[in-house]
Image 1 (cartoon, rainbow over the protein chains, first blue to last red):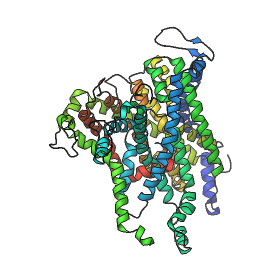
Image 2: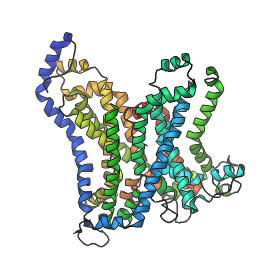
Image 3: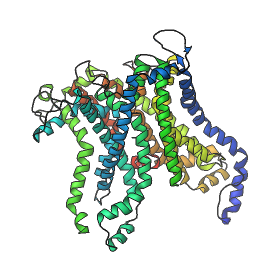
Amino acid sequence: MSEVMQSPAGIESRRRDWASLMDPSDRTLAIWLLAPTVVLLLLIIVYPVGRLVFTSFYNLSLTSGLPAQYVGFENFELMLEDPVFWDALWNTVLITIITVPGALLVGLGLALLANLPFRHRWPVRLALLVPWALPLAFVGLIFAWFFHSQYGVVNDVLARFGGPRIIWFNSPQWAFTAICLAIIWKTSSFVGLILLAGLQTIPRSLYEAADVDGAGRLRQFFEITLPLLRPAIVVALIFRTITALQTFDIPYTMTRGGPGTTTATLAMYIHQNTVSFLDLGYGSALAVAMFVLSMGVTVIYLRIMGRGH
Amino acid sequence: MANLFTGMPLRLIAAAVLLVNGLFPVLWLVLTSLKSETELTRVPITWLPDRATIANYVDAFSDQPLHIFLLNSFAVAILSTIATLLVSTFAAYALARLQLRFRALILSVIIAVSTFPLVTLLVPLFETMRALNLLNTYTALVLPYTVLSLPVCTLVLVSFFDGIPRDLENAAMVDGCTRLGALFKIVVPLAGPGVFTAAILAFVNAWDEFLLALSFNANPQIRTLPVGITLYQGEFAFPWPVISAALVAGIVPLAILIVIFQERVVSGLTAGGMKG
């Protein structure tokens, strides 16, 4: 605490003034300044997570009107035997392993294009920002209209090239494809913005040196661009993965999980059990599963980040 | 050979790809909103409207209380932005300026919170808000949204505060200004761009959130825009022209924000970037 900051010897005396003026109250002040953050985190994260774990061991259904009853691991046993849970979990995992690499590839392409020396940067920047800023629920609705079987622009373009007329939302596979395309479109521009910032930190001189050495564009990409972009890629991958596991808005607005429950995600199943069925005990058990899944990814993330630095 | 690749045609193609990819869906939405119901249900479909009409916009506001949804979204987004800014300014100042033994730990906790799955809070928060009779109130959303944006705003502000020379505050404090006075009279004004960046990120986060808004505030008078717009769709019917018009109305405030402040948004995203 006493070691204030490293500063040149020239302002040593002023530093001591400052330190003696502020040091006694620094600790108290810090506590007061951090108090609102701590209170909010306790109230909105720590307490609810505790409550969540607690409720997951209880039979608490608000429709029955009965008081909560301790049932041990019954909710979790129910969950493991529930085919809809496994379907929802599988859909969530599938969305993650399709849309995360998908958004990364498309985002990398967008970033490479956006990094070209344009005379005016703002139209390109705007084109990357619009998909980022749009609410996910809006994107779901927009793409549901895109993929409309009769009046949708996607089928219109397909027809112009002699393709088939696909009834997107009647088949689980096509509905799932449409959802994944919407998610990749929405999220690739965020990835693109992060990677573009990464690209802009790579010194031009590296490429000039490679040109002198006679390395081709492709070799330059794999031996300069990709390795130096690695930190930005890791950051984008992790945040994308964590948000992909929570996918709700786009499938909810596009298909409501249909046909049947074939495109329902874990988040949608949690929402349904909690808000529609008011079965808080079972909803909590599902949310605990989601929590474990997410924390697993975060731990892997912190490991990778820790190794990177 | 190398010059060929950085030449004009490639740049034109690249710009076209980026613009079509980023803007076509919104452009298509605007075109749809200007077409009449009969034109929209014609096959093959038209691309440009035969006769542009604003009837869908009139219907969007009369079929559902769209102006109330807009008002609710503004209220929730502005209230949570103000709350986030206050809380994160305090926290960021403590982290950037005061000698904290646990600075690294606190920063890690804040980053960990940013990866926290909001979905899992749905059940306990629903239970708590219901017990406290807070369902269908702004509070039910403002509190979680404040926490949602807290990590990114704190990180952005810490990086901006770090860039402001301490001498200015020290001088003010030698002249009798208190530490908190120096924070609000010297540091916050100098970190204006950073505070503004944090504000835009918090606003967009709140404007876009759907799951909690759908779950906590189902009452039509208190619905935010994304939730309200999904309710235009009936059980079997999707009134696409009206939905398109309502969506455009919801995009206009966002579009204004990002057109004017695009550089700020990009710098904020890349400084603390965590929304996708």
